[in-house]
Length: 245
Image (tube, rainbow, N blue to C red; front, top):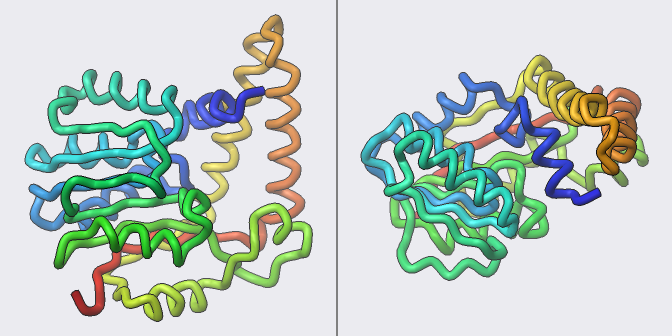
């Protein structure tokens, strides 16, 4: 089954592809867009949910998004048109790591997409290339709340704990000016929505040839979450400024 289709179905009821609720997203965007007239870039924008919310809340913000999924970008275009913000949104169908921006941005976002660059440090390096002096970066990534099992590391990668994650960010020349640690309720809500939305689609469409696989993916993901990483994995989202421009 196509991974893009799985992701689209799994995020049907949780369009922000990260464990953050609407209030947390709103608060982070308010801190990341203090003037309300910034130019924003999302590296790995998916369906453009972060940018759409920024544009809807700030009528003077302009935004660009980059993603390899044409289906996700099509969804973003339609959603932007429905919201009436399409004139302030430009979308690019290409790999985020190869995006040649024509100008600098006041805000660069990458939440839950650092894998596209090979990790947190290279994602910050990419963001720096696109950032205007005095600009902000909004970045979100997972971390280990406690010592993980080897199975969890193999599943989610060799992340650090929260203090080490922040230390790494600071060592790369960034200063956190705001942050959000996803609460247990947000983490669980995201996983229940992911597995439940995909499973519901499979049960609602028993005649679809992808239905058995979708149900199997949802079932396996739920087992992995509950048995392997639920008690050890967390998510942090940071608003950063360059320590010295």
